[in-house]
Length: 136
Image (tube, rainbow, N blue to C red; front, side):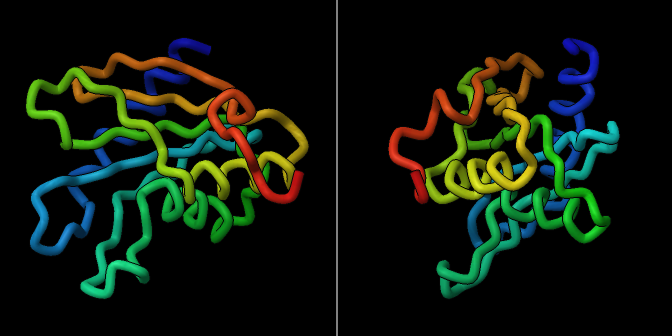
């Protein structure tokens, strides 16, 4: 799986260039791997209202769903937040919840790949990083 996860991280990094981040210089990218082996990626889509902003993880999941792909096996996330390019990007609470819901709908655990801009990463199951999902 390592090679496939490397490809997934590379797709998330590539998605950074298409992120719409408004006035902010921080970019977020994500890529999902589906059960059929396809990869769908996206950057965030910023809204001046903030509440309408699509996080990169949300947009990547929606991208897969738009192609009829609902069984997600892994998601990678990355950001330009760390100027040293070493810090792993962790999904926020809202994105963890959405990933968890995708896991419940798909039936198989989802690996969350938290990556940095050097292409390094750590992998956790969604159940390891979400403390109180809804519904239980």
